[in-house]
Amino acid sequence: MGWLYVVRNAALKEAVFKVGETSRFPTQRVKELSSETGVFGSFELMYYIHVGERKRAEAYAHELLSDSRVSRSKEFFGAPLAQVLQALDETARIFTVVAGTRRKPEPLPQPMLIRSVTCQVCAAEQNVRELLINVRVKCRDCGQEL
Image 1 (cartoon, rainbow, N blue to C red):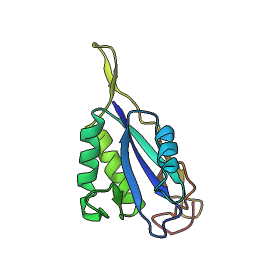
Image 2: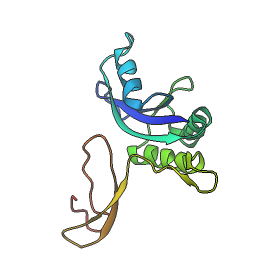
Image 3: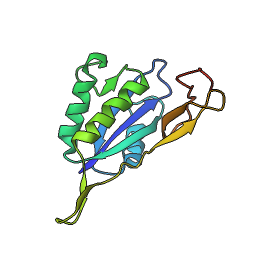
Image 4: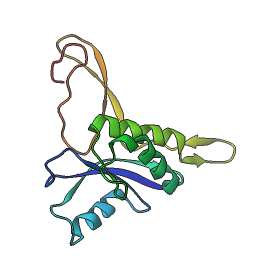
């Protein structure tokens, strides 16, 4: 068991995201990444999921994002944030952490929830994902900011 995480470095002008794995809580890993001497600027944790078999899960997520990989030897991807999050959610569905008893095993819920929001203009229901950063979300029907 472990975690997959998405971070960004504000010092990078391009929208590039690092997708990595850790056995520790993701905030600890981000502190380590930000303190490495070869890194300019600090990393900001955006999203994380827990997974079983973290190494295989990371490889799977990287494969889903392979078309947008910045370098073969690095874990950085130039995909839109929505695509990166979709890849992690897909990975979480496949590499589920099961908890509970043998008689009643259940998938462990992910820490970052998806909530339903109603647009104030057109009344359309939207599913909006929790993130650790502030983002602007627009209604998919009318374009109004939610």
